[in-house]
Image 1 (cartoon, helix red, strand yellow):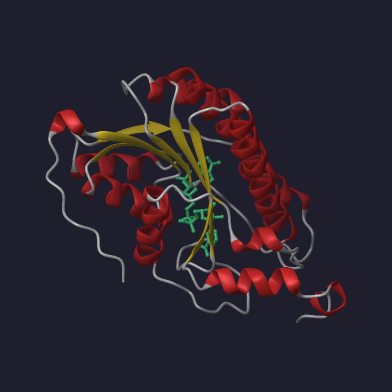
Image 2 (image 1 turned 120 degrees about the vertical axis):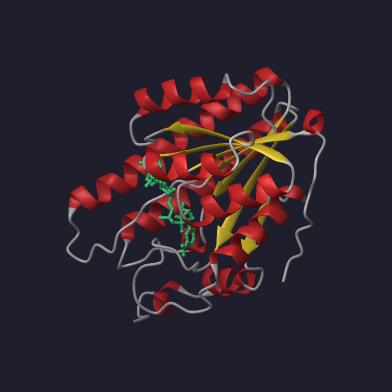
Length: 252
Ligand SMILES: NC(=O)c1ccc[n+]([C@@H]2O[C@H](COP(=O)([O-])OP(=O)(O)OC[C@H]3O[C@@H](n4cnc5c(N)ncnc54)[C@H](OP(=O)(O)O)[C@@H]3O)[C@@H](O)[C@H]2O)c1
């Protein structure tokens, strides 16, 4: 179990974070942890009632902004507006995501996953990267998934979108390194977490969302490049990558 100390920070010392997709699940828990650890936190999502409820718990520490990442115009406007409410942003965590079991290969389901996890993710990651370039420093974090490592027959677009995110992040990491930018980028790969997103059959090691969010927070604080959550999912990652295609394709 990860220990998170209670903080009574000096207001002048507050660090700032933005959690994209903080209305439920990992993003919501992570936002609460960040606040408990002395951050002022910008929270986004489409369910404004949930954003409002969170702000009401600590109005001086949460700043909320409606944002639909699948709509680039809306997203640009929302990011500008939210960013303008901070003098400095230390870390942005992209938690927004969607995915459906799609055994019939219904394109409308795949399209929503592509719009959110690929187009929306790319728009936000690029926007934030440029903002950090202007600011001179920053830390961009994306919650990808162990699903990034192999394809999946039940939710092909979801796994493919996570592979895209992980690969894109590596590109940004290389860009930051090559251009000697003071921008850190972290790829967090959870296994199954007990949220609305954990769909499909054959789930195992399903972890409570609080535990997952605590480990995400720890990985952010230690500025890891890649982190598996919980840590034992690293082993699954190794096994998944090592499995020959001829065996992988036969898995039930
Ligand atoms: N749960 C798991 O087993 C698991 C495993 C590996 C990785 N992950 C990843 O973890 C991330 C968080 O998921 P979760 O498990 O915490 O599920 P969740 O409770 O369903 O949270 C998803 C979040 O994404 C936001 N979101 C979805 N579509 C959006 C859109 N178009 N615009 C803006 N925000 C949007 C939702 O907010 P609104 O609906 O209010 O917009 C919500 O805050 C996802 O990227 C997911 O792929 C989850």
